[in-house]
Length: 401
Image 1 (cartoon, one colour):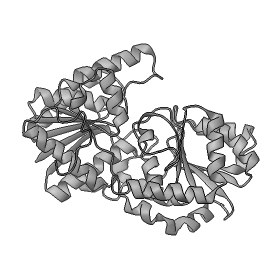
Image 2 (image 1 turned 90 degrees about the horizontal axis):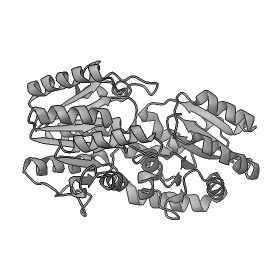
Image 3 (image 1 turned 90 degrees about the vertical axis):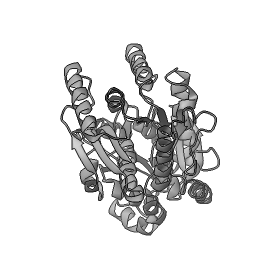
Image 4 (image 1 turned 135 degrees about the vertical axis):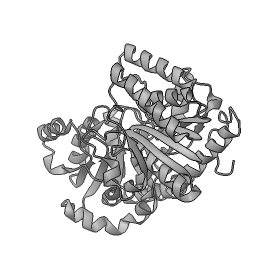
């Protein structure tokens, strides 16, 4: 097949890793001719194509017109540029990602008569933390774009529920395909645990609670810090490791200092994807306190590494953070419940081991990027064969059909 993937920017992030692995697998496993169409990788997260060891293996077409921010004149020019590129490429499939890339890409593909147009929902483009005008406009844009594609892929059942309930598209237009990753580094990372812990000054008796996320709004770092006041009072050996960077770092460091917890927190900063397995290996459990997210990659990554997770019950988190089975699932913003859950796990090594082992057993195969790509390519085949409405009740598409 000739396949074009369209995404606004290839920063270091979950949607971008998903897209990169799909492109690489389509080329390597299926011999497809793949082009990645994107814009500048602006932002503090870093450029994934530069940081990933296989980033140079993808054929990339880029334009400064492709930007995340809404700009009517530039967006119109970008749309014209996309149409020209697609007319040159003549792809069998256009697969779009992210809100902006999804809207422009689907319209351009529709106008150029691409046989199969597929869009992946990595996270709900509209949510309750937006103002009503922005939320309503975003929903209407998604409804409009959904009518210009053939199938929608959700990275979690929760995304399908949210968009179908909002009337974006009928459920039979959606299939859930979990966002794949390279799982072996997480399975094998435990051998690096001692060296990485030593690097950050963690001793054997320290119980390290990790969080992997950008230091941005709605990521929930402030709730973790609030809960740490109680956790560290009851367990002085508790330590917190924040992996990621962003505009809120100064504010969070001040919140920690004001709470008298500076010695209990370590900021690892922005790290390339290849270092995430060893950083998770240094942890004893992972906390995810975001208020919105499709399905944070850090949750299955921690579980595949054998670490239990504690998460707020938002979006796709409940599909891997199984309460009492692979970790704890809590009401959003409930700091008291978060502190209690972190205290329970930080003080019970046997419980951590049991929950982590179950997470590894359940999710290692499910989150292999090869599994994801086989399911995605099957969607392409079914759309090209003229099938419609094969999602719905049978939400997950098997590699075999």
